[in-house]
Length: 349
Image (cartoon, rainbow, N blue to C red; front, side, top):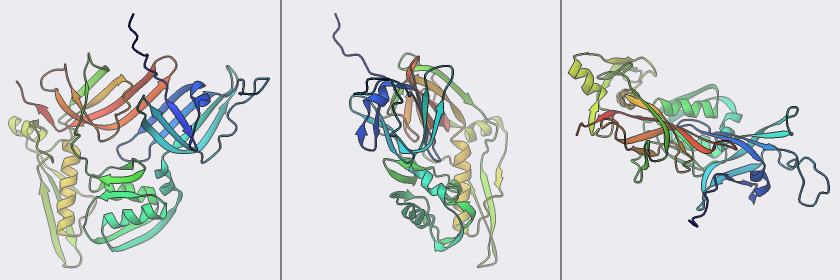
């Protein structure tokens, strides 16, 4: 008889630094949403009725968990953190079944959404602005967005909305990663996770779409300091693509097209070049995109890469993860859903 141990699909839960196996045992469902750009969130539902460790009668179990409690959710024999955040909402349900308690969680990026203000950050780079915003919310920051020095205006918006808007114009994803605010270009994944129809993937759907794809992006603006017009264009998708890009396909078909980006307005030549590059790469990387549902893969998160196998030759190879969603329930166990994208077809064999 095979003596290999069973894999425990149930995650482990730590509340304010204390492991809570009682919470994990009562877990009915869990949904963790990890966006490429923005605040991560989770919903954790448990049966809130049963016998306590020393109680003679059944009672409500989790009244000790309140607003602001620090929750860390991990999975695996060598625990991988799926989510690290704080309780920002508590829901209770009664009626058709045993009492249910649902904890609504957000990562610490939500702290930037708590303050709304209007400010002008004069003669600073986006990196300096983000460092300031993170520091004021007691967050560490690891940023490399842009070194362009200018004035950046926060207009009656939360610190989070302003930070997201600032990063978006440079096509940089802002999110929490390993306890720090992260805002920088994605690096190649040294260890892509291998998935395929016969290797963990339950369903795969991909789409190659030439709509909203262009051969180049153009930006025009005005420098008020020199009273001169500025302009720039971009036609490269970023990292070298080992295959045929949307630009290549449009060229082969003779479908000439370019995209003029009216917003944000470039106020210098360096801004024009940065916005043209960001605008073209934002669209180009989504030439191919799709969805994968797989058996629970705790290593998946935004920015990681997947190597698809056992699919058609033009889809084989490396894809980047955008949105990632980890889901657990008592019927299906632990599953992971991801949205993937890349800028090219693979070379035909």
